[in-house]
Image (cartoon, rainbow, N blue to C red):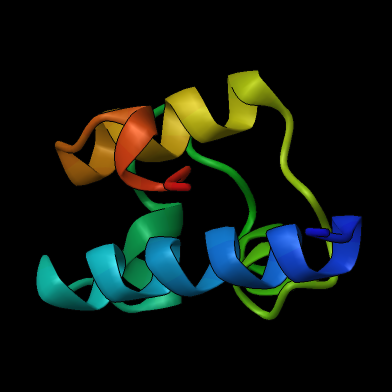
Length: 73
């Protein structure tokens, strides 16, 4: 069974991979309009925080990917 912590870690890893693939640092990411603070993004990427659907939407918009790219079975 997938735990909340494991899910947060998997989503965070996928977000980090997408951000790095786009060539953005945490600081760069924060400069986008309607972005989230770099500290919050770091917590998400490290699997310490499970992001809301709205936060996933904002991240996906900035990275040019679908929310479903972060949530895979």
